[in-house]
Length: 157
Image (cartoon, rainbow, N blue to C red):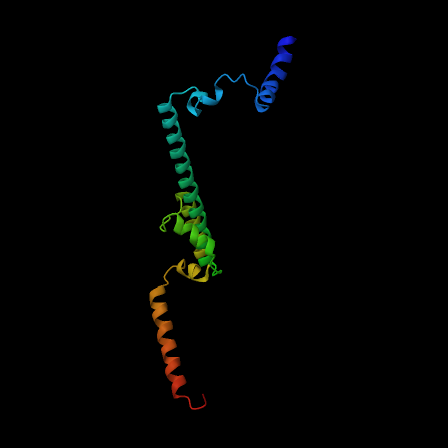
């Protein structure tokens, strides 16, 4: 019982007497951060370098992910003709400017594009057997050229 009381109150009592300026310091203030961690100075410096490197790697990965998401959003803005967002462009610039989409996202976008092409009128026409879209396009352009010429000759217009 006395042990439990000592452990619960003892630490708080030491903190209280230390802050009041009690004179029986055991030199704890002279210990460096490495000694309080139980490491030598060299080990502590190496540990700190590792922490900084890991933080930089995490920050770089986070920036890369943000840029990938911004690239995806800007792709959809271009696709659906929505206004551009400056924050997305700045995130892409922070990551180095040339950000590629992850394979999974690029694959999803490609599948969506293929589905939209199949659902479109030209996609349906391309699926018809015996239909040459190139010749159809040429005929349409020739007809459009003839209409322009006849409109120029018209005196009413």
